[in-house]
Length: 133
Image 1 (cartoon, rainbow, N blue to C red):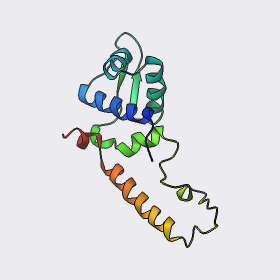
Image 2 (image 1 turned 90 degrees about the vertical axis):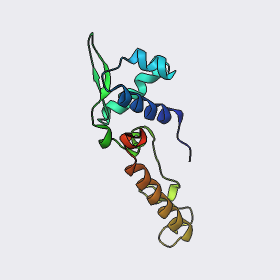
Image 3 (image 1 turned 45 degrees about the horizontal axis):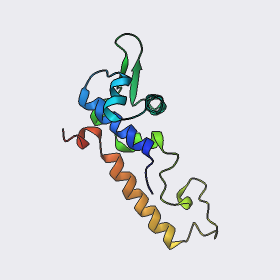
């Protein structure tokens, strides 16, 4: 599994806003992070929809965190941007398996345990902890 570049940018945008601690313009974020402005809007729209950041309009407008850094997990950010974070197709909600063996497959059991550990790690890693604060 590999996170897409959009997700990497989203994590970096949230970290940048956490460090800034105030409202930051889209132009500043785009310039500092090296993200094309149109692409930044695509990412910030998703982060806004998930309640991670907020957008302020007007002269003093821009983006800022909507939640405290200890209340934002890396899991939250990744799930806002990635269509799936399942390690294997058989772990999706529909439990699809080409062998019809999801209930008794030792490989699926291994994947499920690994997925549980992966999710737990991401759910317990907050923006605050990542920044070392």
